[in-house]
Image 1 (cartoon, rainbow, N blue to C red):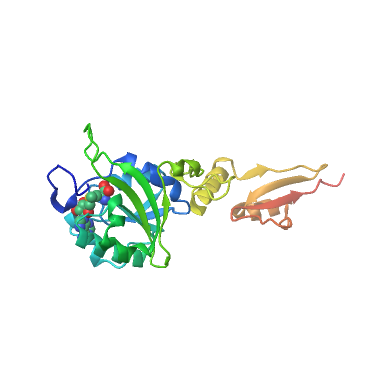
Image 2 (image 1 turned 45 degrees about the vertical axis):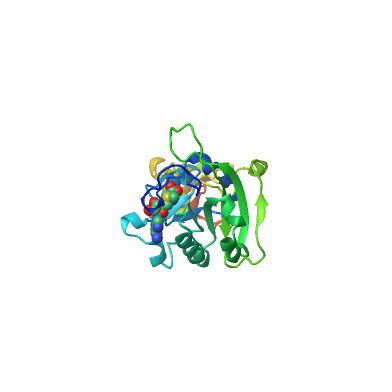
Length: 268
Ligand SMILES: C[S@@+](CC[C@H](N)C(=O)[O-])C[C@H]1O[C@@H](n2cnc3c(N)ncnc32)[C@H](O)[C@@H]1O
């Protein structure tokens, strides 16, 4: 909510972020998989970001007795993303605090960048993404009177912001998201062939496949030799029945769950 608003100010500057204000930020979040929201209010921004496949590792708010200034880290997040209170003194203390912890995206009014008070913060501001006016009150016909922007701060950055005008983000290829075949969570694949959100899910899916497809899976049959992928637990039984374990092929390994075994034909 900007300083020229006609609405009565809410306690602790509680103005949930509408989804429309989040959409223009998304193209700029490449490489960000998890985030902390230390001024989370009722969690509106958290929900919008999660809807785009990001994972929230910390959410707190002063109204739940979690003062963002009282913590020096907020879990293993890639970035802090929040719409902070706009009361200037508090907002400035939060910017200084957040940018020392992690790269930080803040939704602020655009005019702030032109003020004298902003000057000390602009060297470590790397990007400003303009989003225009924001409709703060859901269902209202009116937008706020101030233009807004997402500002990125990082204490390691020293040479001021690049300004990204309205809709420029649309030219950045969008983040690709997939649904994990095991747990159905949305995730961002790092490889185009990826099917699972994590190593755990990949292994769980593999284990499940082995347990539903009996203890052996037919493998390639060459001439009259027989080959089978056999679970470790069944290797002894198969060995007793005349099968021999084969070494892993070059560049592969048998994996945790199966061993390739061969049975030669009985002599005639
Ligand atoms: C503009 S609202 C935004 C809420 C939420 N970030 C969102 O985008 O939907 C600002 C929030 O900051 C919280 N807040 C104010 N001072 C705080 C502090 N020192 N530590 C943590 N939260 C604070 C307020 O209670 C309020 O919920």
